Image 1 (cartoon, one colour):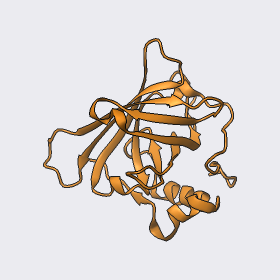
Image 2: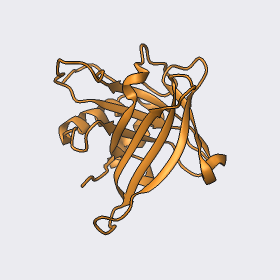
Image 3: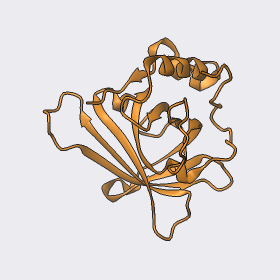
Image 4: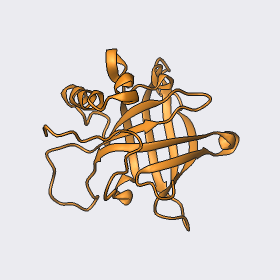
Length: 186
């Protein structure tokens, strides 16, 4: 594991973001967002929108209540992520359907992704750290995504929490004193 910080504070633009490599399903494996506290199997799937820029994604969130019966139908939230003009790795999310009036802003703080056609395997798993700005309905928060449900070890998550804490400011405040919790997956 690298000793250099792989994450940057909110407001930073990341260089060379490989937007196409973010497409597909990501599992939320750790978070500071209270809305995930009583949820499990939280996943976000990003897909292209025909005719839209490559940096605009359809966004489908699926989750189950933590104590839901086995085999229950997952809940979904649908939206569109549109890259903010002049901001690498920062999006504005707008809900679809009844949530069309809802918006939020989120951004990448760090990532390690592999192109889907890459033959060589990396020693580091695929991961993403996202920061969500506060809205009228939710506080600011952080999520850690993994390409697979069990793709990030507890040690990896703890190291990432330490790196996030070293950023100081709001991010450090979100992770201190156990603010980051694991999101369970079946």
